Length: 159
Length: 189
Image 1 (cartoon, rainbow over the protein chains, first blue to last red):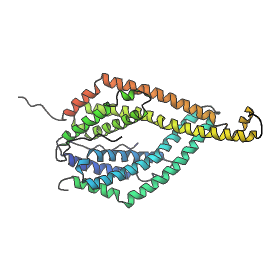
Image 2 (image 1 turned 120 degrees about the horizontal axis):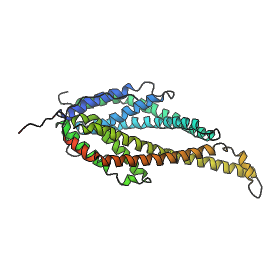
Image 3 (image 1 turned 45 degrees about the vertical axis):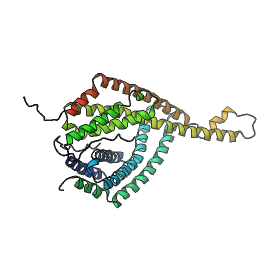
């Protein structure tokens, strides 16, 4: 799993200044994980992007009072939608991997049932990928990255 | 679960003071799930406690360096708690899905063998050998047993972990650390 960048903070700096800096970093991290995220052969990519989306969402919620209300609400809603779409893909990824290791541990007579359930999860994975592809298009079309960076600028006095 | 509102946050005020307010509310939120979440049947409370742990962990990860040294320890403790609650949640999600799927196959097979029986007065158990999903039932039952057993084991681990946190004064120590400021020195009178 990709580690989030450490961000230096000090207790004395203004809350909004720290919030602006952290939102910028977490926004860049989220979008840096976008490449190859629809590849079901490499499930770590979607995991990394999902973790980055959760971190960004957490930061937005922590620093909520620092941002212009309307722009903040719309950006947070879109980050949540992206995080949900990443979850739609990630959940079956995890279940398929767990079933694979479970199937390897049980008897041959028990394996077919587990494989049938894994097939069902692969269908969910394909559906999750379709949902995620749409969400990524929405992110692009609505300029989410730029809106998040603009939020950070608006939070920082004198930016 | 909607997060409890934190009152009195001021964008122009120091980060440490605002973060302290958030940590106190998130810590109280987390602790408020006990003892309810100590009941293994309280699936929703366990799930909500996991979300509360995640919220506390994130604020501590970001602003921990503002506080006393125990805040750093608390990040790891909160992550361990979130992890075990997350594993329990995975079982709670997978088990019902698995049971629904297994029941679908039972219904399909029951219908299929009833059709195979045709006009017979009673159902011949030997027809089970021709049920379309006959090879799937054993594995699904084994997986359900495994997930149920794993859930029980994880729940015991969760209770042990929480008991250990209480014994070591997790809440009081984190509250104290949230009131400290990193780098602050006490000036002699």
